[in-house]
Length: 209
View 1 (cartoon, helix red, strand yellow):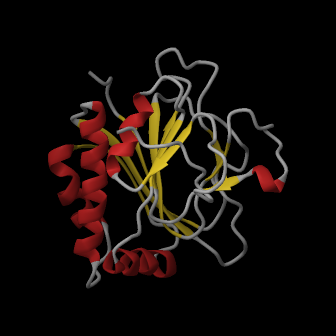
View 2: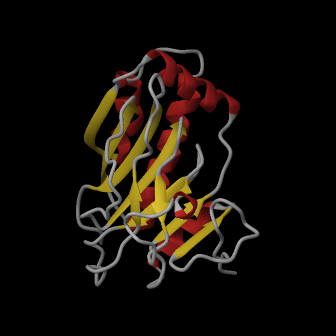
View 3: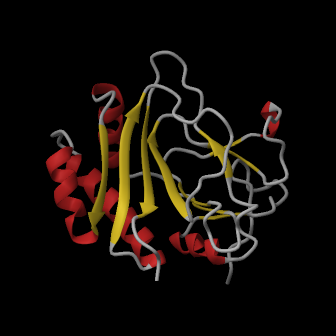
């Protein structure tokens, strides 16, 4: 049965056009629906994954990993790149599982992976990405902000929605087939001084079959 469209902030609010969320990973496949611009898998992070993300957020400000990588090399890339910690393995397994979901959904053998620990706002203006589809998840810190499609690009504060840490979102971009004038409107959150976030994004590194 299809997942119902929900508000990310409160499931009791009225449905938001173009947006769908659910507590099972299968909800992400709704991104293939013509009228869906954003699908969100709502989940809570395992405690060990949280611990490692908090370690990165606290101790590894400025960490950057940006690479196109084949599916078979994801774990070895993360093992070679991420700093040691008792809970590192759990974090690597979680990232790897998200990569697998993303690659399976779009039938990809190679993905563009970015894992950053940010202490500044990367994309402060609301925008639509010039890509077919991007996966975004925040492991620690403030999540990505987004608007319903009919919202103004200079909205009032009460019309801005925020992804929670751990939630996995797929956002359609302008390069999705027949989506040139549409797409998920979003921006990076404004980070106060001394605050940071751990952000993972995945992109297509090849045309989807």
